[in-house]
Image (cartoon, rainbow, N blue to C red; front, side):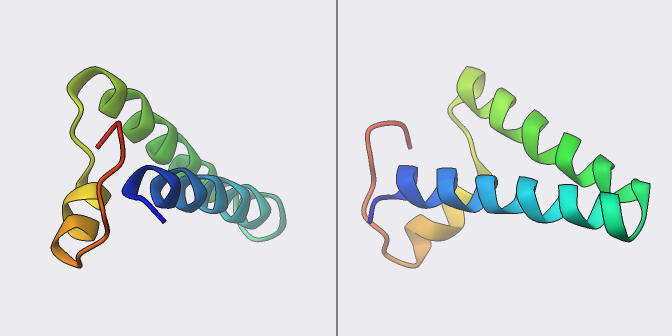
Length: 66
């Protein structure tokens, strides 16, 4: 699995989990959903993603985007 696929799957999972937590636990979890979305948006402009840096250090092979 490449870094690109891992990031997309991780971000998707975080959005779903935070939406569920926002619905069932506390609406403040929606801020985490917004953070994930903002991070994905800024990474399209800058090419920088903190998770990509961590994954690269763990030896996950790079993809086309990161």
